[in-house]
Amino acid sequence: MTESTSAADIAAGYAFTGPALDLGALLWDGACLPDAPVRIPLPMLNRHGLVAGATGTGKTKTLQLIAEQLSAQGVPVFLADVKGDLSGVSAPGAANDRVRGRAAEVGQKWTATGFPAEFYALGGLGHGIPLRATITSFGPVLLAKVLQLNRTQEQSLGLVFHYADTKGLELVDLKDLRSVVAFLTSDEGRTELKSIGGLSTATAGVILRSLTAFEAQGMASFFGEPEFDTADLLRTASDGRGIVSVLELPAVQDKPQLFSTFLMWLLADLFHDLPEVGDADKPGLVFFFDEAHLLFSDASKAFLDSLTQTVRLIRSKGVGVFFVTQTPKDVPGDVLAQLGNRVQHALRAFTPDDQKALKATVKTFPDSAYDLEELLTGLGTGEAVVTVLSEKGAPTPVAATRLRAPESLMGPVDGPALDRAVRASPLHERYAQAVDRESAFEKLAAREESEAALPKPKPKPKPEPEPEPKAAQEAGEAREPGEAEEAGAGAAESKAERSVVEQVVGSGMFKSLARSVGTQIGREITRSLFGTARRRR
Image (cartoon, helix red, strand yellow):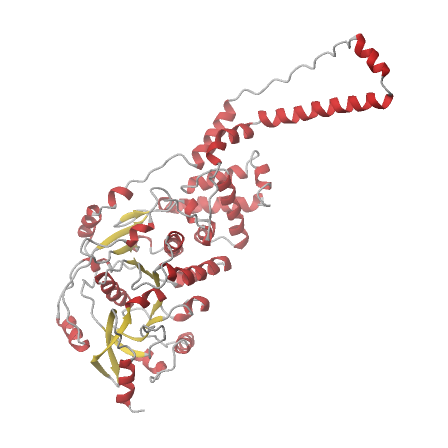
């Protein structure tokens, strides 16, 4: 096969007839071929993907490029902005010689364009609308990862959630969960502790200390109300373009376990709430999961199993997920197998580990006309090896690609402009102010106060036995000896039963449960993957 034929064959693999996103132009034999565009079919964006490459190779600009074109096609996008340089998607780009040169090379008609965007910040730390979750909806599996609990402690935390769910104790914030765990380790709560499946006091103590330490690090603001409704990520602007939701993470980039797990909560919440749509003409949302290796690091088997199932099934709900990381080996094989769209930027091979990662990456691609080991180490910034799913769902030929330049600002928007955009958002009023309503902490505190205020009952004096009437004495004398014994035993048993009932009804625990039984009926939380709670809209 000649070189020109190979290039033509590759180009033919990307000649789609339906709507598609333009990534760039084919690179062949050191030349860029602007008449051979490399594209991704729009309906295939919910088949998930991977954007990988070493630091500084252009992954962030690739995200920006794809997000712009999705927005232009009316598809909402979610971006996690770890480094703080994706806010520029909301502002028109700046034309310069470099941008004009790249556009000419790839046959791009470049026009400076800003796109509709919303900006969020975890717990309101940083520039953005505060994004919060309640402890109840976050669930035990995700929270265990944030708290870095081991498998046994994770399972024990699940029992605590189960207890709170069944007792109608809403876990809104960290103090709610801490108060429930503290109650279960108290003298009064130990009997409750034994009834929920063998949670040891020692393990409960570990969970309690982890919660206290987590809160001491300033993490309390991430959990609470008003809880973010992930349906707000699915909006379009008045002109029909999809809104780009940017989660600003620079203020918490030193807390990778927290923000990566929060991203997974967003995805799990979407999965629980969205209806099945099957194969649509375009996705309802494309979700970019930056720094994906943090999500998989030290993850429990339960966590990985739930993640794999979420990624596998959320496609039918119209959501596409792109994982962004350095090498494909950062992603577990079961997840990687579901990522049909691949944009692989340059890799470095300076160490033996780098060499292993390079060889492993090459093996994840279909057979190609390129020497991929040599190609991947020689790609420049803004260049990548691409293979996607065609309109028929088959992998396209591997294509070395020079990527287009984003049309929005390739850099951050300044702080004051970002703050103005946040305040102007219709969502700001809904989420800006934290709310602390009555929940588990207040209910347990009120129960403790009410029980402390109750006077302790004085023991009643034992009454003197009344003389038995003569007729009864005669009747007793007339009974057989066995009948008299049975009658005495029955009376004693009846008295013992009344005594037990009186003790139970008179106990503080029973009174508390009786007071709240009206609110408990139907209150048990329905949980799904990751133990997250199904939202009730």
